[in-house]
Length: 552
Length: 73
Image 1: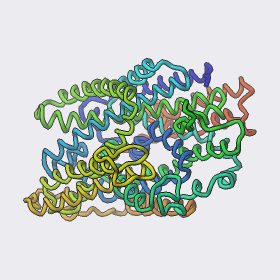
Image 2 (image 1 turned 135 degrees about the vertical axis):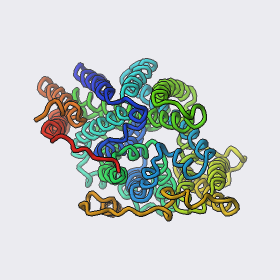
Image 3 (image 1 turned 90 degrees about the vertical axis):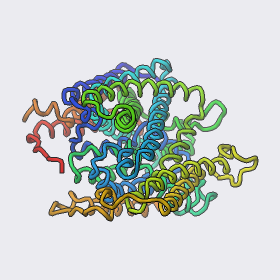
Image 4 (image 1 turned 90 degrees about the horizontal axis):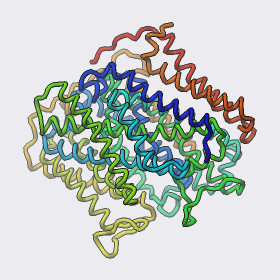
């Protein structure tokens, strides 16, 4: 792939604007609240777009196109089953507690509802997860530029890390969020022309259906058993693992996304942030998954495009989207497409670093190292943490280069941490009897159960490290991941209940605003229907059901 | 129209950015004749979309009324 002057000019304009946004926001960033929480004053449309953009990093954009080519339309389950219902649940049931409790982070809710040890456990595991995730983003960006453009690996890493550090240091969370919104428009507008041209090439959706096996174009008809669909996942694993545990675990408890709603101007905006985000989110499969199906169809057509291959002759699905950009885009749009990829990498990294900042400063530093510092002090700590976070991300990127399986490890950690955490939150918010000891033991048990499930089962040669013969071998790694999540959630749920029944719960008077049954329900007032969370959630769920039915 | 207010509005900043890169893409369309794929002028399509969305965002910020202060509930 060879870039021309105009492509480089587009990339340069992008770099100028992201730094410009940092400078623009710097004037408004005066306190630690401004730096770490965006002043809690951002308008709804920004928090809504940032909410989906936080999950639209390059790993998702490139990964979803790759999955589209590998698994077909079933990949849209990550949106229509694995995202929208959980986003609606977050908006309706969980945001009132996050926002109403005035917690500044997800771990801080845990200290308000339970105790310090539960918060600290979650804060450390989340901080580690964000650093790994940020480093992997950086590593993937450098690898992409090395393989596509011949750019030097080290220079790519230093350039991207330097730019992210500069704009995050200048404007903190607001700067990161503004760049996420910019990235959203860039990705959508940078890829839609590719989808239009690609669809014309393959004869539209009818052409795709005519050339691919029906398992690749239907999302439910072939979902019954592991062997009947390209994903290798059985219906129960899909429904429980992805549709319940992993999706609710991620969208309702991962601070990286929940933070985007927690910094809204008021409760109503905080509740509507994930609901407003649900509408563009449900259409994203047509932007990020469809290119994968187009690439697969083109390969079957046997023309001048083929899915890229690795050195060993296997298909390199991760290069599906970049290879399509190179195939269709001339100089000009090629620059836009590549800039969209750069933006998604950098914004994914900035999102992780800003979430790490907030958790480190509030839940580790302020909680354990210096409790009564001045606001200026915590602002300084936030800025130093930004630099530290970026440096650790660079170190993780090099670690990822040395140990190629670090990405698998990262996915596994997500399952280990997020899946049990959702059980803790569910019980904590909806069962007043849940005790602090119960929550802590439950979380630990969930994480341990996940490790055992991984050690006893195997998929695609991974796992099974506890026994010589695995007790079950899954058809796909995805099936195994869903199973591990179900096991982790169940262990946490059961152990939390058991230990809570034998330990002392907190007084009811201390739980007001933290537990559903002890919190006054707010009325939605006279606002128009589209301004009320209830009808918005209903409309989002209905629209998602329609999409599921169309592509059944 | 309030340019002073608009430059601090994210819609204006993003709109300006999209319009600028849209113009660069259109420049490529005008200077290079080889942007046709499947009978579609890709740079014309992409550049047009960028300018339309970017221009709309920037204009909406330019002609926006001063924002009403919403109080945190």
